[in-house]
Length: 241
Ligand code: NAD
Image 1 (cartoon, rainbow, N blue to C red):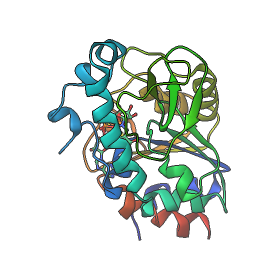
Image 2: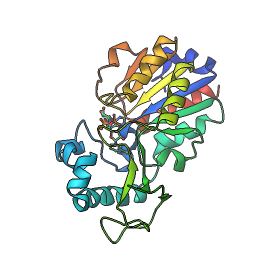
Image 3: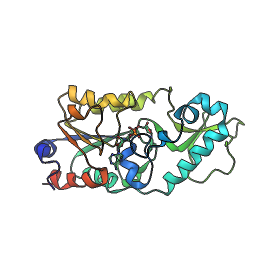
Image 4: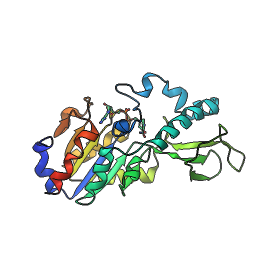
């Protein structure tokens, strides 16, 4: 129960907590990460599956990969890490800036979630402005829009810009929080990896939860080598005292 002791007062006194989360927070829900131990990019080539060029080159191949991930994600459940973040809203103002596309924070009950890289559950047309959440499995791949053009997952691929309104909000929250907790991200993807820098520049306490070191571990006020589902529930007893 002493995991967060060095920063316990900062957590207790904080008005606003901001979480920056990555694939690692969903690892204990059975969703593989991209990098790190057993990461997907050790088995697959990102440039053949997660770029707009790859999609137009072979939309069926890219869709088969995404549809398998979508089904895995739709069958997954939030783990104690997601649930703890949602429960913290009863005690503090909590904002979740996530790189994840799996929707598990929202399913755990978090209300202020900023999806920096979009959502794998949402599908949009490559040409018209059709966009919808689709939770059923897709029988025809690639799926086609009513307008006749190809549909794509509403995720941000390599080389694509982040949704600008979401990014502006995320920068604002990062720059105005009292404590930032960075969970399960390798901090390898830009610009999301700048969020802890903004928090630190504005005097926030920054904490990391990750079983492996990251490029920012040494800049953290506390860097915990722990899993999300194990460490995050401990935050509740600290902030509720
Ligand atoms: P990443 O794969 O680059 O890094 C994952 C990090 O999580 C690693 O540092 C690893 O050590 C850590 N980790 C592994 N297990 C953990 C656990 N149980 N608890 C805490 N940390 C753990 O992921 P990223 O930094 O999010 O960047 C990858 C990109 O991939 C993002 O853009 C994201 O959109 C996408 N992605 C999303 C999902 C998802 O939605 N669940 C899954 C894979 C990739």
